[in-house]
Amino acid sequence: MQPDRPLAAALAEGTVLLDGGLSNQLEAQGCDLSDALWSARLLVDEPGQIEAAHKAYVRAGAQVLITSGYQATFEGLARRGIGRARATEIFALSVELARRAGAATGREVWVAGSVGPYGAMLADGSEYRGRYGLSIRELECFHRPRIEALAAAVPDVLALETVPDTDEAEALLRVVEEYGLPVWLSYSVAGDRTRAGQPLETAFGLAAGHDRVVAVGVNCCDPADADRAVRTAAEVAGKPVVVYPNSGERWDAGGREWAGAPTFDPGRVRAWQDAGARLVGGCCRVGPEIIAELAGLLGAATAGEG
Image 1: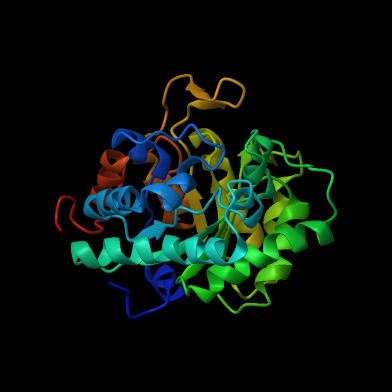
Image 2 (image 1 turned 45 degrees about the vertical axis):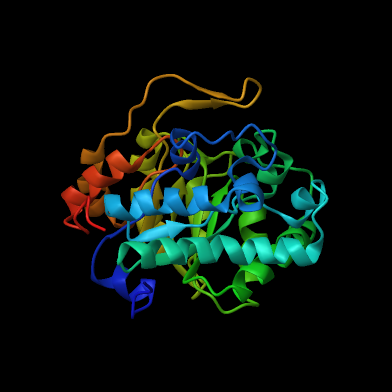
């Protein structure tokens, strides 16, 4: 079910709960994600698995579902022999599957169309480094077709997520101005800098003058780095803050596996709220059980219903 008010209005009134990592839930359902398209492969081969993963998060209490197209691009799909017309249908399907999940569980959910960084298309961990050697104009040209396709599917918001540097953020912000949808801008960070090494004050400041940006913040980072980033984003951008870190484990792009111990503590949400966070959740390796804990802490939808 689609809420009867914009996400921005809800953020002005209180905290809204995001979902968690889609890939880990799909793996828990027995899906094989060892593919350059990662979870987006299932948009082509097993879309029912994606809908089931979305449902798991709605039942846990998530109020916003991020679509499954993070690693789906026209270029990446073309390498699988999928033409532009079919690829456009796949982007639309990613939005439809999230809508269906909300309807099937009888819950009102906002749908966020995922716009991953250029590095996600490369499937080599480049989104954790940035600095691809492309100009801002070249990055605009890369992102525009996918954003156009997603905008045509009419999600409630676009999630410009896991952005590693300010050049790509600037390119994305220029493109979304052409399509009229609200967006959030979320960086991947390390310490007090973007993954490409720019100060967070500079990165978050890019969103300050954009009316389309309903929230700015971080995702897919260490929870401790998220703590610091939330405060900085609130001070610099003057907008609601979005925060959805990963579990605290580290992704080994070469070995294609997670290493280290999880450090995500749902209790952090209180400090995030106090610092200005209004859109909170989890990213990689944060599953429905943790989202349910967050729902309980936030007083969001009751886990287990639907």
